[in-house]
Image (tube, rainbow, N blue to C red; front, side, top):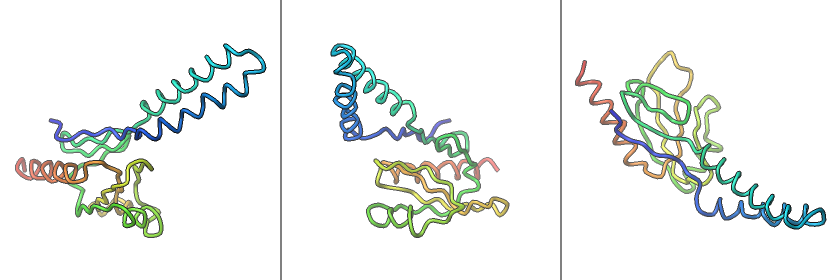
Amino acid sequence: MQIYSERLLPGFWTFFAALLIVPGTTLVLFPINQIVAVVAGVSLYVLCAVLLLASSPVITVEDGFLRAGRAQISVAHLGKIEKFDGQEATQQRGPLLDARAHLLIRGWVNTILRINLTDPNDPTPYWIISTRKPEQLANAITRAQEEIQEKN
């Protein structure tokens, strides 16, 4: 049963900035053929937008697993969950980052969750996940952990 799902879509400004592909491509191809230049510019923008949407990772909590992009882990191996935003998030993603940590971060999402792992056999100390809904994700993990404990 799915408890939580979130797709980390790029923000409006990412798509707006990608619009610079249109005049750039048009300027390069304009001397060759004006119609081809405009069509190529618009086509490249559409392709870029589709790729941004298609490559947006999904975070889910379902069936006792946290899935972040292509990675997954049983919620039974998750410990303390901490929320960071602003400068604290920058510190966690930068100077305070353990090189062994698993990361699913996106520049257009400022808030992160740091989820400590409790599995002694896993060399990864924690996961850092960008999320727009940190409280909901943390609550979903907690609920999934409680469901596993009830089953056992």
